[in-house]
Amino acid sequence: DVIIDDFTVSTADGGLVEGGEVVGPEEPTVESAGTFVATTEVKSGQYLIGALVDGVYKVATKYDESKTYGYTSAVDAVAAGGAITTATAAEVYTLTAVDGGYTIQDASGRYLYMKGSYNSFNLSADMPTEGAVYAITFNEDGTANIVNTAMNKTWQYSVQYTSYGAYPEINSANVMPTLFVKQ
Image: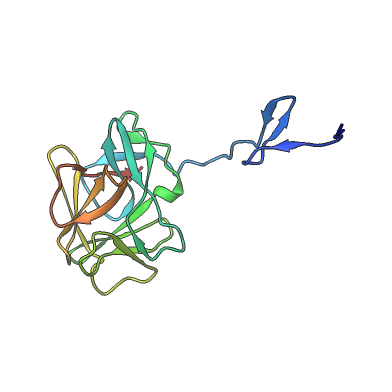
């Protein structure tokens, strides 16, 4: 026989099991980045970039700090009354007017730019000399055409890969994004 005395069992996320019930850890508090409303006008400011898929917006999120390139990941957000209030600071992109269009920076302040034949984005802490300007126009349905002016590639959400890239042709299997401006 083995007798065990004074022990605790914890779950993988740090919760404790007491009397067969998982206790804690407390859910972390995530602060909203504010209220963002769908827009068909653009000027310098803070935005969410979201593609509507099955009633849920797939909102672009910032890149991991260690990444210098890649496709843009997304998180789910629900728009109530045309506004998203659940976004966190990680989902906020800054658009800045420049000659020929806008630059786009992720929540870490890094510029998204394009080079070569890739459909993914590159990231730079400094403003790149090429591939960082985007022309933005709007479709009748309120979605945005965010076009890299150097590569002539358009931002689209790939349902298949669950991420954003910029492609030379608009693919009907992909979803065009909506811009939400911070109020």
